[in-house]
Length: 324
Image 1 (tube, rainbow, N blue to C red):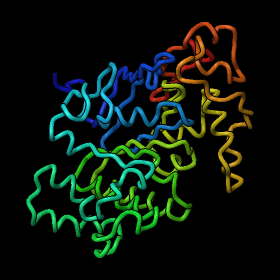
Image 2 (image 1 turned 45 degrees about the vertical axis):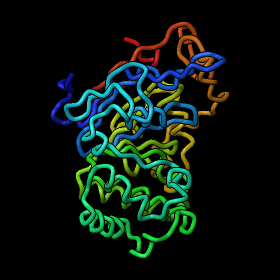
Image 3 (image 1 turned 135 degrees about the vertical axis):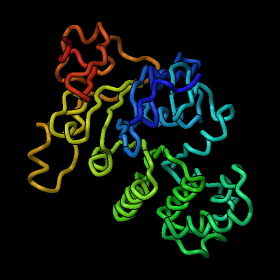
């Protein structure tokens, strides 16, 4: 079945996506009915604490996990399987940069073999591979002699540049970035973010940028979604998101962002003191799963799960405070 529901603006559309993992203790609802789309040329940010389901969402889109249910439409293809059963063109066109390049790069292979692997898989001839390798190293600002080095012989930031080069090797149009800067120092974070923004413009790329850091999303994303216990709770344009947050969880996260300037401090919501910690993904609270931590909770919150509503154009929220 083709991805006929995709608009001309969108490169990918996700509808009612779920990913459940059966365990001895019960079913983990890692992703639980998520809906969003990513526009061509856009950076779509997904933010959440550890255990929110944000990385699992990225893995399902990438095909590393097959969805339990739901639909992913990508450029005329309907994706309902894991990576092995996906069309080769889709595998070539969707790539991923992982959080920890130390574990995502094969320590037994040198940089040349690591970056060359996707080119071999997708049938690039030897001469084209050699040329592309040099081109990719230049793009990520690494010297040519690095081709013979192993991941352990270079720094963490340089390893992440190798990961980015590998992701770019097959000329993809869509990249899932899973916390690509969280393991790096501040100066290297800034360098890699600038690089990613530049590549997006030069190569006409679309990104999903997954992070726990709202400060990073402010610099890179055009739209931002908040996840908690497998669900999305708010989605808005970046400008709207930071000026007019609606969900109590969004306000809690925003109020904890460190600020540098007085203007930034004035934009922040009034400090919302966090209550409790994220619940386990097996015994999810009844009703609104955020209600045990919510400063604005009402009686209905422990009984009924709120719906996903568009409060104003492009600004969605899941909260009983805004039930119509």
